[in-house]
Structure formats: structure tokens, C-alpha cells
Image (cartoon, rainbow, N blue to C red; front, side, top):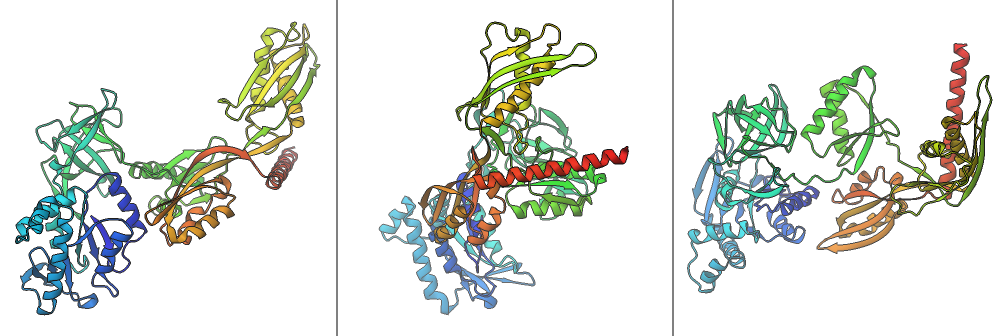
Length: 607
């Protein structure tokens, strides 16, 4: 059911809901709500469904009165007026259409029949033959058109005043498909995820999907849709998404808003809630006779990340508990650890999304979180060949250390799989064979942390072609150190530079905001690759440095009245502009000097 505001009409969330409905092929009704509010206009909203969402709306009702005078609805199928009386509109009364609305109702009735006849062949025959069309002809025709995605019946009302809701529930029964009419597929885990059709049959093996989790006063409440078979209180069910984990169903309830009704069992087509079943959102349960999982719902990639840490280190346990629970109940909320920086990174669908979870950690887990900007994963590389010839010589009391390594480092092709290559061209035994692997280890150690800004070095080929050893003082450690220092010598001569991650950004926005959105991408050093118009929406594709994408979600929403959305994924690494590179090197140098000074003062204090 696509719910729309009678005043605001099609909003940004309406586009998202419409996109999900199309992706999962969900037949829908539209309900225009809040008709008792000032400025409500159901005709305008119905037109927006056509213009903005490219649907075929069919107005099923017209209002009796408008705004604060909204008192009832004219049902265009039955051609009756319906009033909702009592303290909360619970008494539904049918009556004749008011005299002042008879003409308007007849015209709307004729438009409705014509709209249905345009998309349903059975009704079209009667319509063209000018036969009398009764509700018994109309209801099946509207149902066929709705289930086949050829039309969207539009209903009106005020949920707050409980007006029109009763007729909407009747429409769900009359026009939307029953569970047995929908084709649901599962993936057979025992046969290479082959698709098998599930049947809405209580005698078949049980299959249910946990689609929503809630932390209630009695523990975790798991909402489950039963696709096949039946499940009862006290039954053992198997979680096929979590390694065949077997759990018992201690309590089964049917939800009525916030009220619960205990039930002994549930069958295919039911939506129920279970207590005491630990699982994650999207897990599939069976009775153990079959091993299948439902196809997972489409979860968009996270568009924004924040580095987070608890303000008080004693709250670390609560911090971990909160993150664990949130990732279980919300598949769009992700947690990862950046091994390079040691930061905990949370990712989600927008800045507001993450702000809410940070607030929930504070409120529900008494854990104040400090959000910070995550570190961009830069890389260092070289732009030309750099030769080296380094002798490592160290004499101590006993045997010393000696090893000489000579050769050069050079850039690798950008499409090289590993980003590092070691080449041994030593001839004549100038470096004994047993020390060659030590040279490789030394180079690998050197590329872990570059001298420019302290990030890993990529895209280098390290070649050795000469060296020297000592019969007593040479060792694996000596050649490893020689290779490490030799690499640094060659690196300084190879014109090193800094690489930054470039993201492929796809932005979707209404056509009227094209200038503002393209301007924003250009300001963020973006390169526009393409723009494509689909109906009233534009899809733009650009390459933008990740460092310039922070805060973009908020800026995009501001520029598009909340109607724009974007996704991004890593594309490649590219060289940082000279000015920015010099600033980064200077910052890193100052940071090291500051850290070094701090370390020296600590040593003096200890001394």
C-alpha cells in the first residue's frame, strides 16, 4: 500500500517506496491520507502519481466535503455515500449521494469505468458494447488490472479521524492478491542454490522468514512471515541462515498494533511474532526437513561512514553490545574495523540514520559516543625508476652483520593484480641463494609504510641484480635490513607520489535540480561521465575523490528538497593534485615531529 499525504502529495520517500515495489513486483493500492488537513487536494495527488511516478491511477472515491469539513466518501463502485460516525469514526453508515455531488460522482464513475476498460479486455468488451456495467463486473476487472500491475486504484481518507480506513481494508481483500496467488521462490542450499517454488500450503514442510526484530520487555520479539507449512508453540525450528542452528518456539503471538494475542499455531500466509528466538533480520527458518533460504531483500550499499569510539573506555562493553544488536535488527547498518587506523567504522544510509543510532547508544545503553571523520585510505607509489646500492654493515662484540644489495625499483602497470613484484636477477652467486627470500621480505616490510604520509606503497617492482656477502657476518637479518634500507634509497630517487581513492558516484534526482547537482559534483573535484534522463528523473554518473564526498548526503538532500539519492563504490586510485600532496606531506611531517617530541619528553620524565 502506497500511502501519500493529501497535502504534500508525492514526496521523496514515495519515490523510494515505489522503486522497492517495482523491484519486488508488488501490486499496490494508493491511499491519500490526511484529507482533513488544510490544503488537502486528492485530485492533485492523483495527477502526481501519473506525472511523477508514471503509474496509471484510478480514482475509486471522491470526498464529501474538504479540509475541516471532510465528513465522508462517495464510493464510485457502489455509487453510494459512506459516512463515518461515532467518537472515532467506528460507525460506518451508507446513504444516498448528496444532491450537490450527484453530477460529479457520475462523471467520476464514468472516468473510472473508462480507465479500467483501457487496461482490462473483459470489461473493454462490455464497455464497447455499451452494456450496463455493474459492481459485479467492476470488482474482478479492477482486481485483474491491479494484480497485473496495469493500474493502481486510489483511495482517500483520514487515518487520524478513522475515515476511509474501513473501505481501504475492504479494498485490500477485494483487489490485492491472496498469499496463494503470489509466486514465492526459495534457494535450495543442498543443490547449489537452485530455485524452488514455495506453496502456500499448511501440509508442506515449514518455511518462514524473520523480517523484523524488536527489543521488547520480554526479550527479542521476532516478526515472521510464514511462506509454507505450519509452526506451533513448542516446535523446534532450524535457522538455515545461521548454520542449521536449532531453536524451540516458546511463545507464538499474533500482533494487533501494540497488543498481543497468544496463538497455538500459525500456517502459510500468516504474519506472526515469536519470543525467545535469537536470530538476525532476514534469517530463514524451516522445520529441518528441507534446507532452503529465501532470497535476501535488496539492501542498498552504505553511502556514509563515521569513525566512532566510546567517550568513556569503561563503556566499551555496552558499546559492543549496542553495535551487535543494531547490526542484527537493521541490515542497512554496518560495522567494520579499519585495520590501518584501528578505528571502528559505522556505515549507513545517511547522516541522519547514523545520528539516530549514536543517540540510541546514549539513551538505551548509557554509552556516549564520539563520532569522528574516518580516515581516507591513501596509498603511496612511484612514478619512475630509482636505483639503489646499499651496504648494511654492523660490527658488535662477536660476529657482525654484513650484506650488500643493489638493483632498482620501478612502477608496475596500473592493472597489475598484486601491486608488488619481486624480481631476482642475481648471477654469479654475489648474494647466496639462501638469502634471496630475505631480500623479498625486506622489500615487503618497506612497502607497509611509506615515508611521505605513512600509508602503504603500491605499484612497485623491486629488482635485485647484484650484491655482496661475507662468509661469517652475512645472515638473513642482514640482507633483510639491506633490502629495506636499499628500497628507501631507491624510493627517494623514484619521484614518489600519493594516490587517493576515486569513487564511482551514481546520483538520481528530479530533472529540475540538474544544474545544482552537477555544480555540487564539480565543486567536489568530480568528473561527470554521463547523465541520462528517465521520465522526470536524471541519473548522473561521476568520478569523485572519496576525501571530497564527506557531507555530500546532506548537501544533496538540501539541493534537491530531499528527493535526490546517491550510491558510490570504489573505482580506482589516482594521483593527488600537487598542492594537496604537498600539504599532506607537511601535515604528516609535523605530526611525526610532534609525536617524536612527546616521546622524548616522556623518556626524560621517566629518567
